[in-house]
Length: 243
Image (cartoon, rainbow, N blue to C red):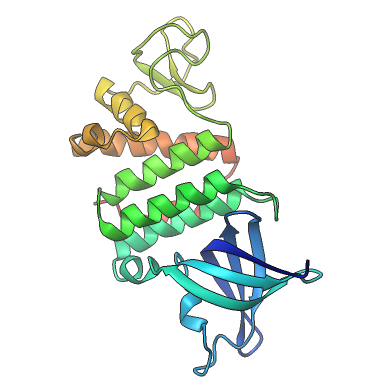
């Protein structure tokens, strides 16, 4: 069918011509989609404001040869408004959106779990349910887990020896016992590894009670783990303001 409808998160936008925009979307049923929104930069546009980054929308599109065309948009959750008003939240959401783009690079490949994970993370950010740094690190770990790269935060990632262990190696898959520990492995505090496990499993009562130094250490490990598996740095991650 040439027309189709889906729920989507607006990941980012690019100008096209004098009045149009290219919108990158993560849809619930059709994966990542790039589409043209015609005339949305004009003041008379009926749905220009509904296609701002981080918003969740119900959208109708028309199949095209290279880019689809957006024909209808209805707002489901305007998360972009509260997020865009706060620099820390905005940079955090930008890093999430870039991660979603990298993990769903095959256009039109269904990724419903990645979609639901991103929507939940944006909701947590916009409502300030938890510290933005915790929400970001939890999202990064869980999105990697959905992609098949879940880190071990307790048992040894190599031999499976029961933890907790005192070493962490991104290339080796996470926590490492003393016998398997490769040279150059990090030696995080036990509380940091416990925090990583809580962020991965969604145990927010544990994560919210952690100290700032353990959150900072955990963020460094998450960034290293993400970079290793994506085989590139996230440009937006360097701009994240961590309170």
